[in-house]
Length: 128
Image 1: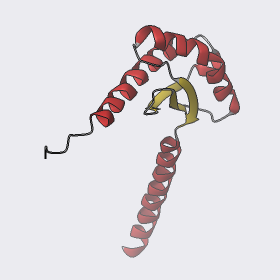
Image 2 (image 1 turned 60 degrees about the horizontal axis):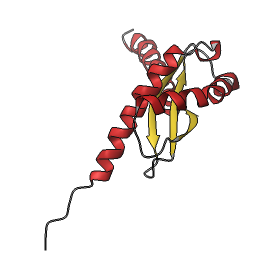
Image 3 (image 1 turned 60 degrees about the vertical axis):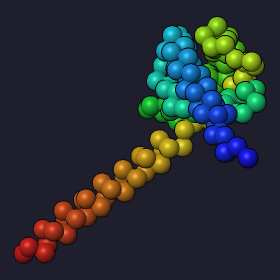
């Protein structure tokens, strides 16, 4: 019996995710929509059948529905640019989600800052 083969499909999807991420990030920089001025593509998750892609984004400075509306209105243009840039069996439909890691990271940073402030205040009292 031959040894089990590595999961090529998994590695392939990771490469597809990266290529789609780069293509969308480059095209988003060229968009003239002011709602998308501070938007960054943080990651892409393409489905195994290549028909859908979840695009994770961060909007520096604001968290509102205008950014999502701007991305949805730019989706046909972004998808067409993706089709010109990347050769895939299927051109994935784009779905946009705000990257939860950004908000979690900010929350962790707030907690750490609070702990450092408490340590500084507590350390001064112990020395007296």
